[in-house]
Image (cartoon, rainbow, N blue to C red; front, side, top):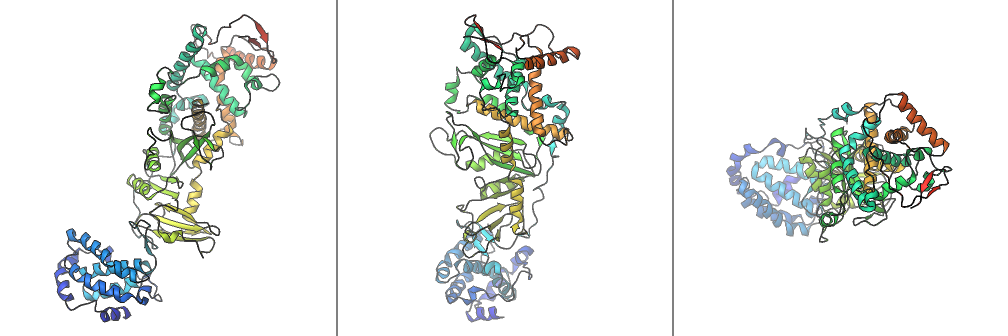
Length: 617
């Protein structure tokens, strides 16, 4: 063969080779089949490696001859193998720099040195001929920009991990959720239980006594539900930004608001609505920027995971809650529609957008030192209890280290990756002279990289541990198609909760987001248990939100003693109280709790424009 003639001409096989081979024959049996098994199918018979054409190959071969000899006697010993590789890499430095194929010469040299020390002369000549003629070593093998990862254009033939993408849980509502869901209100109680609302109720009553003193009357849970129900109804009617006076107006408002409570009572509750004790908040804020709502948030964020099992694909992405008020951790994100707001990181089911886990970003820690590997830490925290799923994320989170940690947890990953990452090979970053819709692939043992050029000058990079080859469907790789199909879990819930949001200031904006997500998660659970509910209607979520709001305000309307003045609101109150009187009683037995209201400073009574009585303060 031509290669053998060249090697013999350059005296690579010196006279002492037989003695070196005899010293290593005892170790040949240790050579695994995978290290010497190379397929002829991927060889290009017409390909002549550029290394053999290089004018500077004599320097490389001379360096190889001087290095292989003494190293071959000890290379098989484990304690000296790493030393040989380091010495070989440093030894070919001058030779590689004299030629045009530094990286290719380095690969060929290491392979030739390894095979010479572990094989016979005849086997060495055959394997060298096949190795040097493979595009894997001559053209398509390259190192990352950092030099610590070797990428290949040939997919790995190792079978995928059996534990990856094997889901042990059945997607959908859990048994606990199914056993507790009886109606729409019970579904909401699973996500916003009385234990959380009781904390808010105690803090609100404490704040009411601080602001109004003895004039404040204790607020009960029925009134709390009515207040939350009005917030939901305002979101259903897309009136969260509308003036309260307009909502309660007889001309432009809704009858259900006047039928539930007076406008003054709603404003008083909003004035003192609290989530913690204001007295010790400054001390807690020194170490926790989320101190104003930390207790409620920690209790609520643990509610969604036990109620729903996500499907095989989970999306991790950022969510920006629009807010331009004063907040110590308000963020500016120019890529988001709202630009300013409070940033959340959510892990959602890609199919249903069920918010499975969330975190609030509170900015840099005290001292102003940014956290290292924050994006990787957030993803690992959000996916802590997942197993066998595929995680889809964007270029803010995707990295080679994250891929390693997720594989350890039996999770795969698909995501876009930024061009400045050191683990990328430089060959994938070049777009010059590449045709439109062309794709390039690089692989390691368990990772795939794809570079796609959708239009001139644009390069889209994705990393995946889910895909094992470079399958192309139409004009796009399968990696990109799967990413597009599963990337919208968080964006979809962000769009849906914004359509019927009930948010009004920090920290209430966070609680409003909790209410919005709780309502949407309750909607997903309700459809999981009752898939045929309003099946032929297009706006099923709007009907669900309206029914939820009415279910929350109905108990308080049933106990209302002061009837509104407008005929339409009176009709609603009479109808609800009449249904309560004719049907099974749902009012609490025993003495009724006092209605929380503030005594008037004067006894002057005036009539508002909507015909309801009002108290002058």
